[in-house]
Image 1 (cartoon, helix red, strand yellow):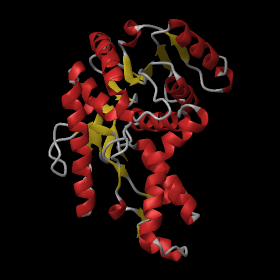
Image 2 (cartoon, rainbow, N blue to C red; image 1 turned 180 degrees about the vertical axis):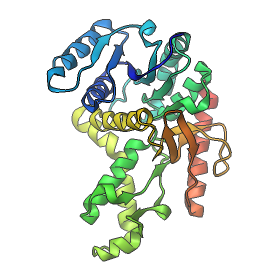
Image 3 (spheres, rainbow, N blue to C red; image 1 turned 45 degrees about the vertical axis):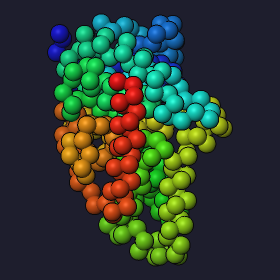
Image 4 (cartoon, one colour; image 1 turned 30 degrees about the vertical axis):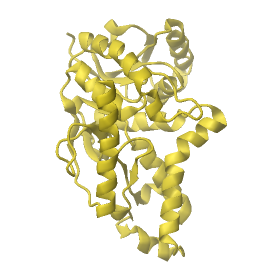
Length: 315
């Protein structure tokens, strides 16, 4: 197998999320080569052409449609392929369809590339991350999902709006399942080191419980709201993919809540879900222990159980 080229990415699946991610990665200048693969070959060709036509305004790179043989030297393989979430459908409704799709895709990836990083973006991301690791046989550090990176960004955005402060100064995580059982880890949330409730009071907000409930629900329902209004969500997740790739390519050791297989983390093992993790060129280099309240611990275990039941059902 070819040695991996750290400046080459592959995107499997050129629907809304795949093509928006390809566009975000082109704009980022992180890669000099990108191959797009889709079951509908012409769709991949069209997206590659469309994005390529903007290259005179960006940095030089080669973007083309290809097949699995073209991924042999890709350092990051972004898997967005799968059925989309329809209005009224939960992420977990998608499981059986998308596990079936992964059973045909992942073995083809593994047959052509053994040394890259598999970044799973298709939903339900936690189940599919677990599935991808089991089907590929890749080391666990090199198979992880976009997890709650976007949910966490949504939380920071809403807190930034609520407090009229730059969302980049807000430090808070959504953990657990990327879906209906996700948890806002309020007990460790802060704004530039100042505990969240103290900062809220500085800004004239005193109804903490009510505000926290409202914001956590808004984050959880963001995707449903966007899907109802425009049919699909893709820009936010595309920017999350770019952020994760940046951490890998630049070996940033950034702490991001990606979905990876857990081993006795808060008593959880044998399931993929999101916890803050150090992300660098080796993939997930370790999880970061965060303080959780008893209630958050219990909710996290419940989230893990929800995912475990689904895994037992489909795998």
